[in-house]
Length: 226
Image (cartoon, rainbow, N blue to C red):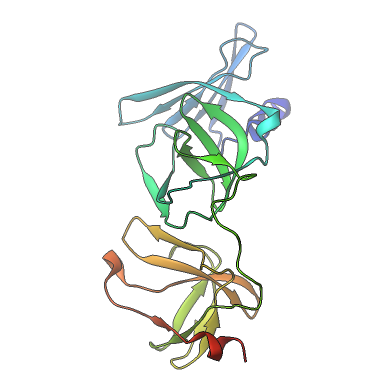
């Protein structure tokens, strides 16, 4: 059973095993709402069935040469989904310069990513990171913001489900990690910005739900580079 658990981990599919059944020299691992089963005992091909959706994804394979491979969407607006069937959107990468990194698990027109979050993307509109869409600006040109609400949370990732790192008081200054800023839009419509937090990189929501309202305002560049 230990070997089968390791195999699942290497394939890069996050599941919580409920039971492992050996049938005819092969194996089947069942998790809540998801089943993965190789076509043969020696194959890395898998089948994913989404419970309640009626959608079955077949032919998922692990390609070692794609582990940690970098991709980006030159037009931005790259949607990241929670499942290979692409039925539940996690968030959208709005910046064309934001890279994603693959786990090596791919299927027809889809690929699993592990950074900036574990999920699935469509491969039709992504390209190799060896051809970046823009030239990075000088490091000295920082982007910073003034916090305009009190006790603004900063989290380890783009979403309220991520761990809270701390809060910023109204009137505080925060700095984006990149120029242009690295941003993501979550399923509730909030736009999140990655910042340099005192205890590491963090994310804060610069808008409310559905993009309504602001929590920070961008400051002139001379106030960010003094």
